[in-house]
Image 1 (cartoon, rainbow, N blue to C red):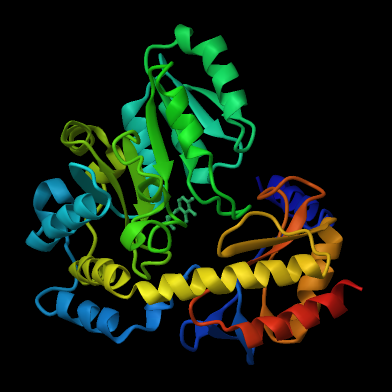
Image 2 (image 1 turned 180 degrees about the vertical axis):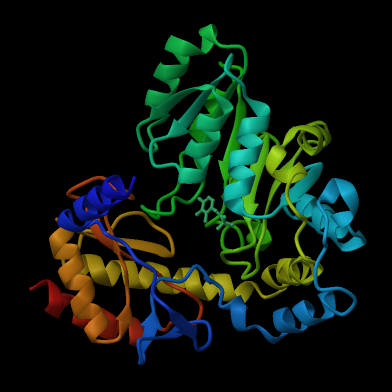
Length: 383
Ligand SMILES: *Cc1c(COP(=O)(O)O)cnc(C)c1O
């Protein structure tokens, strides 16, 4: 065992793929302190800057006033009145009949996919799908087909060839992709649904709070709420909380309450988090200027990078700047860190070889003047 672990770790080191955690002190929503130095955080998912919102902090306190923990799973006694209210609010927000709230996004994708599919079934996932979606697929035992990223023609071809051999089928995609920052062709996938029988699940982890009417997400923006059977999302990104959910039909929700193991065998979210999740749902709907201003800044900054000749993927607040070789990306991110920009290199196995990148995420707490300085430093460090 010992030998095997050492060999694995040494291999990772030789390939520049060795990872370790770094201790960070948060100094507000866009500044962090690491190893005694203060950085501008360009890696955060706190897109709307809600993590330092006074109303969210107050709601955490309110939620913990009586007890600090739910101390049981939902089916035992962990499902309180505010858990119920949170599910109703999510269902409303996402324009679905009902919703179910779970511990994390990872738990949600793994548990929901595993519950709905078995070895007789097939699952078709975008090739860039989040690890939790693939883990759910593997755990379920369903046959896994991966279609080329955002390639709905490839999805159609795979369905044509294989759908008939399996009992149930599911198609899963993200709406905003976490590594490429681009949008899925949801209209095309919904069109394909007219010709093949499958459940459609969309992960809106990076879209919720930003896109669509009131921040409800891309599925809402494209008016496809009725066609998407399971709209999944997390509270841990733009909503600056913790936990996740699936908005779906009443029937599927009841099924999940009875069959989703990561729901049944895990403690319900603590009341403080439920309370802050409720508050952040209100804030994203009331304070639309946060998303509006952020998305305006995103579009200006992306154009500026392109004008400088950078290869930038996608179209959203997630801005992947492709630099190629893993070594180069590591060098550039070290250089940028020495100038107090907190950026992390994204490299294999997270993304394919040779398209390693610096992935920055823009938030409401950044401004264009600051991003301009970042751009100048980036230009200097790639040369
Ligand atoms: C972050 C993320 C998850 C996992 O959510 P957690 O609440 O952090 O476990 C799932 N899907 C996507 C696309 C994500 O980006």
